[in-house]
Length: 272
Image (tube, rainbow, N blue to C red; front, side, top):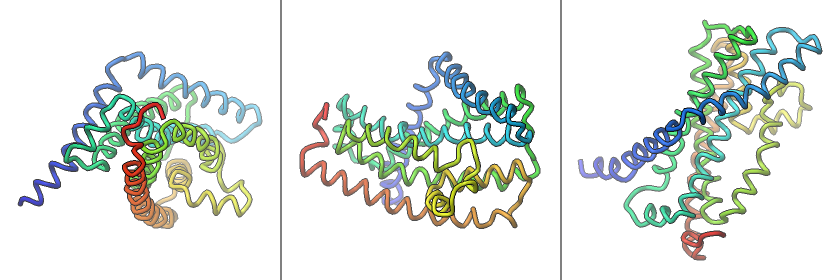
């Protein structure tokens, strides 16, 4: 019983508390929500019109809309977890987190869950706008397998975010630069607006190491091509493996970087 209460107090309660702050803070200004929906739609619209001018099949409308919606979750992991932890360090809150009995992965989980909730609202709005404005069509019979793949993708991304968050704790602004350097390669390899099957074989294997690339491909094939579990079971297996691998590696990387930060005095050193 005591062990259960310890887990609740040190991991789950901090996660719930941090998620509440992210949800409350991210939605306190309605104009933020509006612009976070309109701006991604501008890029999506430009790509859809480009495909239409090239005479691409109508299915590519849904292809682009799903890519734009799911890419938002990568930014949530990259900026919503790691960058927020850097802000906490700059404002001095990170010291309080580390001095408390709370588990740092629990705090990061709360940041991720709160960010996922906010991102889901905006992504759903983007999809609904895409259906209304561009008349995109999706197959609803395969929604269950699409949701399963989507959930596994988010869990795997959370594990990856654990390790990336540690970079901000130790390296400060250098971690921000690493985030910026990762943006374009991830967008390219994940096939945000085009299928990864168009890549050379070597690049397809590299893209297969990214949860977002596998998840986005699976969701598209489910909702646009109507493929079910019999066709997408490999996506499920790969994502389950990536979830375990990225979580273990991410947790190990986070603990190692925090240990380095404590040894070198970087955890409380601001403006680094």
